[in-house]
Length: 184
Image: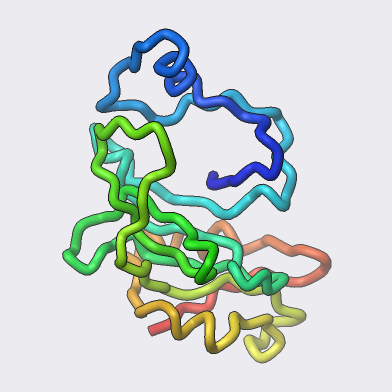
Protein backbone atom coordinates (compact mmCIF):
# COMPACT_ATOMS: atom_id res chain seq x y z
CA UNK A 1 0.00 0.00 0.00
CA UNK A 2 1.41 3.39 -0.95
CA UNK A 3 0.19 6.42 0.92
CA UNK A 4 1.30 9.99 1.52
CA UNK A 5 -0.27 11.44 4.59
CA UNK A 6 -1.61 14.98 4.49
CA UNK A 7 -1.19 15.06 8.28
CA UNK A 8 1.59 13.00 9.93
CA UNK A 9 -0.18 10.08 11.63
CA UNK A 10 2.20 7.14 11.08
CA UNK A 11 5.61 6.16 12.38
CA UNK A 12 8.31 3.83 10.98
CA UNK A 13 9.55 2.01 14.08
CA UNK A 14 13.00 1.23 12.71
CA UNK A 15 13.56 4.84 11.59
CA UNK A 16 12.35 6.13 14.98
CA UNK A 17 14.71 3.75 16.80
CA UNK A 18 17.60 4.91 14.60
CA UNK A 19 16.87 8.62 15.16
CA UNK A 20 16.33 8.32 18.94
CA UNK A 21 18.68 5.48 19.91
CA UNK A 22 21.21 5.40 17.06
CA UNK A 23 20.34 1.75 16.34
CA UNK A 24 19.13 0.48 12.98
CA UNK A 25 18.10 -3.15 13.24
CA UNK A 26 18.98 -5.47 10.37
CA UNK A 27 19.17 -2.76 7.71
CA UNK A 28 19.38 -5.35 4.95
CA UNK A 29 15.85 -6.50 5.67
CA UNK A 30 14.06 -3.39 6.88
CA UNK A 31 10.56 -3.58 5.44
CA UNK A 32 9.07 -0.48 7.01
CA UNK A 33 7.48 -1.56 10.28
CA UNK A 34 4.91 1.19 10.39
CA UNK A 35 2.52 2.02 13.16
CA UNK A 36 -0.44 3.64 11.49
CA UNK A 37 -4.00 4.35 12.42
CA UNK A 38 -6.45 1.64 11.37
CA UNK A 39 -8.04 4.09 8.98
CA UNK A 40 -6.13 5.82 6.19
CA UNK A 41 -8.17 8.57 4.48
CA UNK A 42 -8.77 7.98 0.78
CA UNK A 43 -7.06 11.21 -0.18
CA UNK A 44 -3.84 9.89 1.41
CA UNK A 45 -3.83 6.69 -0.68
CA UNK A 46 -1.64 6.86 -3.77
CA UNK A 47 -1.70 3.25 -4.88
CA UNK A 48 -0.48 -0.28 -4.39
CA UNK A 49 2.80 -2.00 -5.26
CA UNK A 50 2.79 -5.74 -5.90
CA UNK A 51 6.21 -6.93 -4.76
CA UNK A 52 7.94 -10.18 -5.61
CA UNK A 53 8.05 -12.69 -2.76
CA UNK A 54 10.86 -14.93 -1.68
CA UNK A 55 14.10 -14.60 0.20
CA UNK A 56 15.60 -11.09 -0.23
CA UNK A 57 13.46 -10.36 -3.29
CA UNK A 58 10.73 -8.50 -1.39
CA UNK A 59 12.32 -5.26 -2.59
CA UNK A 60 11.42 -6.00 -6.23
CA UNK A 61 8.25 -4.39 -7.59
CA UNK A 62 6.53 -6.57 -10.22
CA UNK A 63 3.83 -3.99 -10.95
CA UNK A 64 2.16 -1.04 -9.29
CA UNK A 65 -1.28 0.50 -9.45
CA UNK A 66 -1.51 4.24 -8.82
CA UNK A 67 -4.21 6.87 -8.84
CA UNK A 68 -4.02 9.04 -11.91
CA UNK A 69 -1.83 12.03 -10.95
CA UNK A 70 -4.13 14.15 -13.09
CA UNK A 71 -6.90 13.27 -10.60
CA UNK A 72 -9.13 11.73 -13.23
CA UNK A 73 -11.91 10.19 -11.17
CA UNK A 74 -12.24 6.47 -11.79
CA UNK A 75 -8.81 5.94 -13.43
CA UNK A 76 -5.91 3.95 -11.99
CA UNK A 77 -2.62 3.57 -13.87
CA UNK A 78 -1.03 0.10 -13.97
CA UNK A 79 2.74 0.34 -14.40
CA UNK A 80 5.37 -2.32 -14.89
CA UNK A 81 8.13 -2.80 -12.32
CA UNK A 82 10.60 -3.75 -15.06
CA UNK A 83 13.25 -1.11 -15.71
CA UNK A 84 14.83 -0.46 -19.12
CA UNK A 85 17.85 -2.60 -18.20
CA UNK A 86 15.54 -5.58 -17.47
CA UNK A 87 15.90 -5.50 -13.67
CA UNK A 88 12.92 -5.08 -11.36
CA UNK A 89 12.50 -1.70 -9.72
CA UNK A 90 12.89 -1.37 -5.96
CA UNK A 91 11.30 2.06 -5.66
CA UNK A 92 8.89 4.27 -7.60
CA UNK A 93 7.55 7.67 -6.73
CA UNK A 94 5.61 10.58 -8.16
CA UNK A 95 7.43 13.70 -9.32
CA UNK A 96 4.68 16.09 -8.34
CA UNK A 97 5.92 19.00 -10.47
CA UNK A 98 5.41 16.85 -13.60
CA UNK A 99 2.54 14.61 -12.38
CA UNK A 100 4.68 11.70 -13.58
CA UNK A 101 5.93 8.49 -11.91
CA UNK A 102 9.66 7.71 -11.96
CA UNK A 103 11.90 4.94 -10.67
CA UNK A 104 14.00 5.97 -7.65
CA UNK A 105 17.74 5.81 -7.10
CA UNK A 106 17.60 3.23 -4.32
CA UNK A 107 19.54 0.05 -3.65
CA UNK A 108 18.13 -2.47 -1.14
CA UNK A 109 20.11 -2.29 2.08
CA UNK A 110 20.84 1.44 1.77
CA UNK A 111 20.16 3.42 4.90
CA UNK A 112 18.59 6.69 3.88
CA UNK A 113 16.97 9.07 6.29
CA UNK A 114 14.95 10.91 3.70
CA UNK A 115 12.85 10.18 0.67
CA UNK A 116 14.88 8.40 -2.06
CA UNK A 117 15.87 10.63 -4.98
CA UNK A 118 14.18 10.04 -8.31
CA UNK A 119 16.11 8.71 -11.28
CA UNK A 120 15.59 10.15 -14.75
CA UNK A 121 13.83 6.94 -15.82
CA UNK A 122 10.07 7.27 -16.20
CA UNK A 123 8.09 4.11 -15.38
CA UNK A 124 6.44 2.21 -18.22
CA UNK A 125 2.69 1.84 -18.36
CA UNK A 126 1.04 -1.53 -18.98
CA UNK A 127 -2.55 -0.32 -18.91
CA UNK A 128 -5.15 1.25 -16.70
CA UNK A 129 -8.07 0.28 -14.52
CA UNK A 130 -11.20 2.20 -15.26
CA UNK A 131 -14.78 2.43 -14.08
CA UNK A 132 -17.23 1.56 -16.84
CA UNK A 133 -21.00 2.04 -16.98
CA UNK A 134 -21.41 -1.30 -18.78
CA UNK A 135 -19.50 -4.14 -20.42
CA UNK A 136 -18.57 -1.96 -23.40
CA UNK A 137 -15.11 -0.35 -23.09
CA UNK A 138 -16.60 2.69 -24.82
CA UNK A 139 -18.32 3.59 -21.53
CA UNK A 140 -15.02 3.57 -19.58
CA UNK A 141 -13.28 6.64 -18.22
CA UNK A 142 -9.87 6.89 -19.94
CA UNK A 143 -6.65 8.58 -18.92
CA UNK A 144 -6.01 11.67 -20.99
CA UNK A 145 -3.84 11.27 -24.08
CA UNK A 146 -1.30 13.69 -22.59
CA UNK A 147 -1.04 11.49 -19.48
CA UNK A 148 -0.55 8.31 -21.52
CA UNK A 149 2.10 9.97 -23.71
CA UNK A 150 4.35 10.60 -20.68
CA UNK A 151 5.06 6.88 -20.36
CA UNK A 152 6.57 4.22 -22.58
CA UNK A 153 4.52 1.04 -22.89
CA UNK A 154 5.34 -2.30 -21.34
CA UNK A 155 3.44 -5.52 -20.83
CA UNK A 156 3.05 -7.52 -17.65
CA UNK A 157 3.67 -11.23 -17.19
CA UNK A 158 0.54 -13.33 -17.75
CA UNK A 159 0.42 -14.33 -14.05
CA UNK A 160 0.31 -10.65 -13.03
CA UNK A 161 -2.40 -9.87 -15.59
CA UNK A 162 -4.42 -12.77 -14.20
CA UNK A 163 -4.00 -11.43 -10.63
CA UNK A 164 -5.36 -8.04 -11.64
CA UNK A 165 -8.26 -9.45 -13.66
CA UNK A 166 -9.21 -11.88 -10.88
CA UNK A 167 -9.22 -9.07 -8.30
CA UNK A 168 -11.46 -6.94 -10.51
CA UNK A 169 -13.85 -9.69 -11.59
CA UNK A 170 -16.65 -8.83 -9.19
CA UNK A 171 -15.60 -5.31 -8.15
CA UNK A 172 -18.24 -2.62 -8.51
CA UNK A 173 -17.98 0.96 -7.33
CA UNK A 174 -20.88 3.38 -7.41
CA UNK A 175 -22.73 0.86 -9.58
CA UNK A 176 -19.92 0.82 -12.14
CA UNK A 177 -17.75 -2.11 -13.14
CA UNK A 178 -13.94 -1.92 -12.78
CA UNK A 179 -12.13 -3.04 -15.95
CA UNK A 180 -8.44 -3.47 -16.74
CA UNK A 181 -7.52 -2.13 -20.17
CA UNK A 182 -4.17 -3.42 -21.41
CA UNK A 183 -2.08 -1.14 -23.61
CA UNK A 184 0.04 -3.02 -26.15
